[in-house]
Image (cartoon, rainbow, N blue to C red; front, side):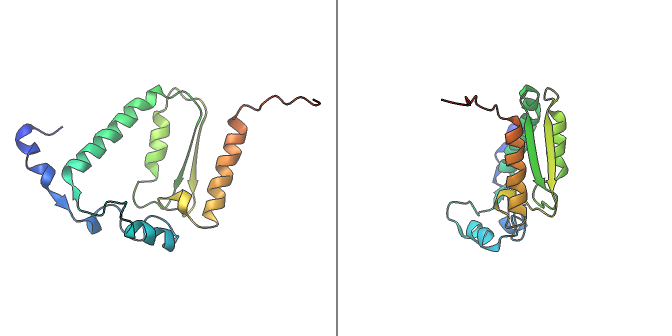
Length: 147
């Protein structure tokens, strides 16, 4: 948290969006999807304020602290060519899950930030990995052989 005298000045400082973390050519290899993101009125495209960055870092810190509360199996997939979030940070987060015995971390080769919005062949790899993982972790219902 910022000291009170600075909190009235610093939160108003801005970084133009084009110099921020999300620039064209960083979200997904799917140009149509990326164009839709950058033209959407539902997405904030204004300057990044310093106060937002401080709040983001606080939330990230809280997530790392709260990681100790997680006890269920976890899977994390991350594009190894992500230019927005450092790919190693997802592995670092999983390492913090000290109460989780079953952790799966997979890097998607050449995947960017939005692996769920990547075109083929990335999309199939991501989805097949999630389906296989869930199939191995979900409790199978009891189905009688005959009704």
